[in-house]
Image 1 (tube, rainbow, N blue to C red):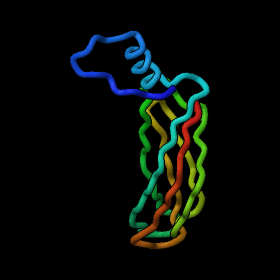
Image 2 (tube, helix red, strand yellow):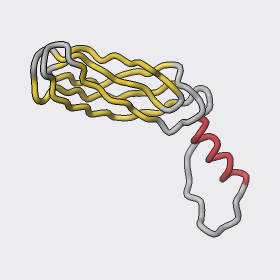
Image 3 (cartoon, rainbow, N blue to C red):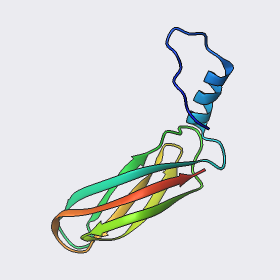
Image 4 (cartoon, one colour):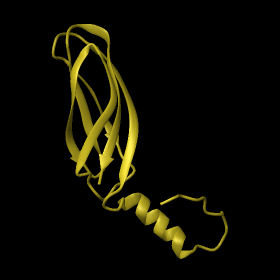
Length: 111
């Protein structure tokens, strides 16, 4: 589905409403990709470095989250948890004390 800009002050068309509904409800089979950079100070080994990643969808919950193009610096592998209709939590454990423990990844939410 390609998005288009609705003209301000124009007549609301059925396609305008469909676009809004499809954006907020994300139909089954759709994906939403976000590039994520998380940087945090880790005071000890295994300290959690992570963040909540929000999605556009506010009604449907993604069936899974796929991570790709991942770069890890001072942290172990990334875990995905708490997948809900508004996003998911991405966390990684620090491999040692660091002021710049970080990860960069592309998170794809699969509906």
